[in-house]
Image (cartoon, rainbow, N blue to C red; front, side, top):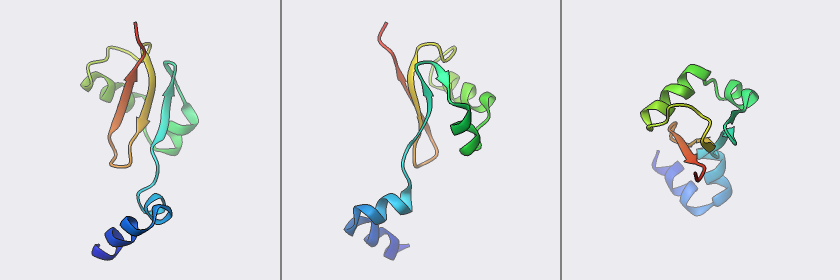
Length: 79
């Protein structure tokens, strides 16, 4: 564990490989089905995480990303 932490600190390429990159799940209110399948996230799970973030639906979501720590972050489009 210490070795991988050190390696990720010393090399951005290694850090990207070890930690991964955020994945785009929703664009302009439209869920990206292929990305959801690739990340093994169901539509119900995505909607549930949206409700936890205070969103009633995905219509106002500009982007939603699956972060490297497993959390979903939502960017709401301006009104």
